[in-house]
Amino acid sequence: MQGTRFQLNDDMLSQTFKEYREVLYGYHSKGMDTFAEDQKKAKLLISAEILKLRALNSRGPIV
Image 1 (cartoon, helix red, strand yellow):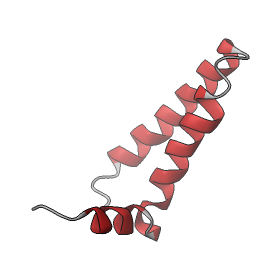
Image 2 (image 1 turned 135 degrees about the horizontal axis):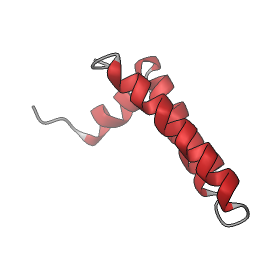
Image 3 (image 1 turned 45 degrees about the vertical axis):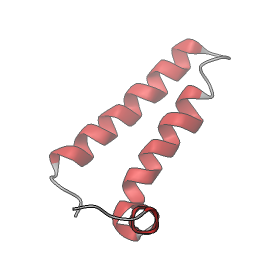
């Protein structure tokens, strides 16, 4: 099924994907942005977000 960009954005901003957005935000803002300053801390933050994503994925499809 092909959707439009509007549908993709609408889906991503819905409450259904809230936890997914939070994990992506944590990965990029907490993890990757910290990497230049403190690699060890950044790796811990990134691995924590990956574990959250794994748990989210193991619960099954979001929609």
